[in-house]
Structure formats: C-alpha cells, structure tokens
Length: 291
Ligand SMILES: [Zn+2]
Image (cartoon, rainbow, N blue to C red; front, side):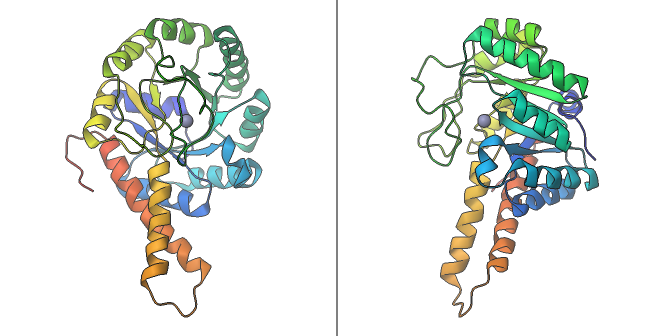
C-alpha cells in the first residue's frame, strides 16, 4: 500500500529501524525492490532521482512506481530523490508521489530555508511528505549523483545547532544530513562522524536520512540506525551487482544467441538478493546478516 514518508518513518522511529530507499530507474529495479520487501514483509521507499530523468523520465517511471506501491502487500512510499525545483516537486505530486525531496543544500542558508518552506507549504497541502538537505553530500564520482562533486572537503558536514534552526523554520518531515557518507561507490573507507549524527538527531527530533548509504559495513549501518537514521538511500551497490551478474552471465555461458530479456531476469535476481540483504540489516533485529 502507498504510504507517506512521514508515516513510514514514524513506524521506523517506534521500531528503531531504518527504511531502505531504492532508486528504481528500470522495471527490473522496481520489481527487485518490491519483491524483496514483500518476501521480508518489510516497508520500503521507491525513489525516482531527478538525475535519472535522463535514463527514464519521471512521466514514464513515476506512474509505474505508484502502481507498484498501491499493489504491494507492504507499506511503500514513492519518493522524489534530489528534486531541484518546486516545478519538479509539483510534477511528482501530480503523478501521485507520496513524498518529495527538495535539495537546495547548494544554496545559501537563507535561500535553502526559503526554498524548503515553499515546497513544504505546497506538499503538505497535498498530504505529501518533504525531505530536505542541510550540509553537503559529496560524490565519489563513481556511479553516484554528480550533484556536488566540486565541494571542498572538510567544510560540508551538517552543523547540529544550525540543523535545529533549520527544521524549526522549514517544518521539514525528514532531514538529509551530512556526516561522512558520499554518493556512489566508495573509493576509500567511509569515516562516519557518529557523535555529530547523534547531536543532529537529538537537536532536530526528526528522522535523519543517510544519502550514499550503500557500501557501508554492517556495523556502521547498525550504529547509524541506533543514532537516529531512519531512511537509508541505497542504490549504487545494488545497481553494480545487477551489472556484474549480467557480465558474468554473458561471459560464462556459451550463448550462440543472446537475448536481451534473459539479461533482465539475471539483473533483477541479483539486484533483489542485494536489496534483501540490505533490508535485513536495516530492520535492526540484532541478527548478523552475512553476505
Ligand atoms: Zn542523495
């Protein structure tokens, strides 16, 4: 069933777990995420990233996400990832998305607040949740969203005191905070600032969103969840897993005729297994989930 981000994360708050948000720019990735969630009877978030409009436009993929969410036997939020404007937000809301992210983190502080306030006013009027971002999430440049690749290291983490002011003034439902994760594939070991994360969570009293959330160790996932992260954006590693499986399939089998539809089946299965593992960890049930 289709649920708002607010409702989905409120339940996560009660149960001290995180909900995985899976970007779904292909039919294989949507089916993988929904099947994984249903098999585990866990809630999820299906996300369409604005940058993926180049792969498949929101007008094409959006209605498919909404339909999958409505038919699912588990709570599913349909979310716009890294929306850049009120115009794109309105488009997502019209399609039936139950949640939007407005990313104005590259703007000045006051402009960020103004932009988020505008989106919150519009979206809340339509019973749609809002995620916004404070601080800057960099990209490894490998498969990630290239939104903030040029930012200078060290000066981009979210300030816990500023975060308090930010959520009070914007009334955002969830806050994407920067405390050491990066978009894309990690080229060096992630170094997370758990103390900062805890302070942001305590100061804001909001569910915290972790971007760049694939590729962490199982211990780090548990630590961030216990520190207030309720939504984990998980994509790059699952997408790479799908491609690796297809590559192996193509190389290993001696196909005299290769059919594209067979590749989609191989990709979907690999993405699904990867997502299932992630969801099991995010549920934070105290069991060790091996690969
Ligand atoms: Zn992101």
